[in-house]
Amino acid sequence: MAKFAKPESIVNTTEYCGGCGHGIIQRLIAESIEELNLQDKTIGVVDIACSYWSLDALDYDMIAGPHGRLAAVATGIKRVRPEANVYVHSGDGCAYVIGLSETSYAAIRDVPITMIVANNGIFGMTGGQLNLATTLVGDKTVSSKAGRNPDTMGHPVDMLKSFQNYDVEFLARGALYDVKHIEQTKKFIKKGLENQRDGKGFSLIEVLSPCPTNWKLDPVKAMEKIKNENEKIFPVGVYTDRGGVQ
Image 1 (spheres, rainbow, N blue to C red):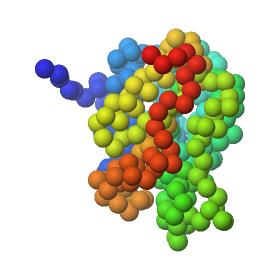
Image 2 (image 1 turned 90 degrees about the vertical axis):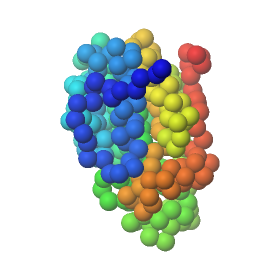
Image 3 (image 1 turned 30 degrees about the vertical axis):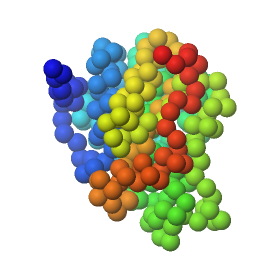
Image 4 (image 1 turned 135 degrees about the vertical axis):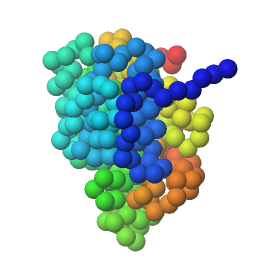
């Protein structure tokens, strides 16, 4: 009989909003690190945004980087501590808008770090503004009150397709709306950490994640939105696997 227990690395509660996907992502990271026995080698990098709550929740060496600059911070850590397993837990506003340059150049240089990016289609911590990379056409935010209009605000962008143009180790997208997809997402995160452990290059795992507070939906309807709307624009699966699917 399977026994399910909280990862030992999670030592404190967090202040995530009810129904937020960041807490699930945090647990998947902790489970993967423990299963790979990397606790003593791990350094986590979190944003001054929603993922910041992991700073106190997880029993790892952690650094909070300036908003959007996590890929650059993680690169610096990896350069001076090459033996460490350095991961980033960020949002899509951090990785794809404010810090698009930093994320892109980490990928271009194939820096051996592992990035986990929550795609919740919005700027969460700063109040729910439109995200140029991930807000769906028609979605209402505090900066697109009538809904995203592609004529003036452009279309969302599948950033994994953009990063496929670079010679990187691993790109994948998971989702959190049911157990099957949570398990798939964990496999992607674990593989990204394994790649780094094994001396391979840049890995980025994007996760379709709910933001009930800023979407103005209850947690169940937020998960349904991911399944019925967001995944159609951002398909889940492996985009790049230089080492081959295992």
